[in-house]
Image 1 (cartoon, one colour):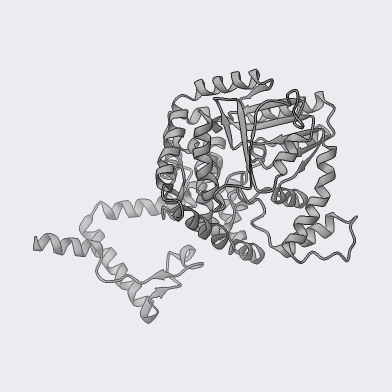
Image 2 (image 1 turned 120 degrees about the horizontal axis):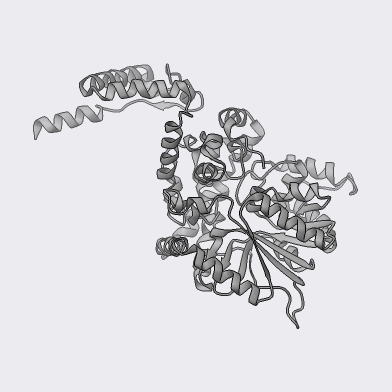
Length: 473
């Protein structure tokens, strides 16, 4: 997928002016935030589970090579094949070659952000193979020629009337007078259209939420059952996953599953949690004749041992996106690449470089909500600060920002002057706010006050209070 991360500022301005998008994004708090809070509160051991999940992933990352080798052995013992892809291009080549070896014409796909990262759909299309997304959200964005705007809800940026219009445009073989006013009718129509696609597919491709080293098992978590149909009906199943999806044991996977659904959708457990080990065995009623696992690195090994290693604990629940005020304002496409929100602001520069994605770590208010709700306790704000430092060191920040920082640095190097100026500034803002108690138009802060009010300062400044306390002992 081609990145437009360099254009984050213009992407964000466009998103803020898109009334349809803003209407769709208004559903994020009620759809995700409130449900997660209720699910977490209903589980007394939720915070303990977060600690255990963090420790499991930290242990794996310290011994990643050993667990990957163990996983490979178990997959082979179960009759499967393991392919190592150092880059996205390697993953494209491996998967395309498997499809061509079986004469595949159509491929069904379960939801997979790694597939988006590796550009699998485009590679298959170049080879004359038709990929068909089967997750409802992915199916919708594919028919629109778009990319997912969220880790777990690909079409969260769309409203029902937009989806209805797309269904009528693309499903032109169905009666024009059909009723599509309710979400259930849209789901029913997608299910009917996709059913024949499942049956005709030569190969099924899925991602993997977890890969279990103990048994060579891949785990997918879905709410639609499309993943099961994708991997069980075709003759060949390809599981594409990044190397950090490894967990040591079935018990460890169970611990993380208890965290995943609650953090993602506010469910105790997703509707379908499917464990797959190898191809169909003698006596099995269904399943593929061949089972392939493609393990993608694509820059993750370079993160090991760095200040960004903790990012590899991520289990792609989307909680940080859902709680981020920036994501809630501009949506996922503004970030310009596969991953958005706070996790994308850390992971994207790691994978495609700070030169390309240096704007993203600045797309944060540093309110800390992302770290507060992350089930794996990933210190996202700290890592965004690291990327901001890298960006500044490489002189990638805008000249206006660098000049502003120089002015600020000059003042803070002179404490007495800084205190006087900051005190005067606080009085000016308070006077400008008046009885309203907030400022909607402030010189040199138009970018902030254009979309939000600035509260009036209350009482004395911190420096003034500190100075009084020091004087009074």
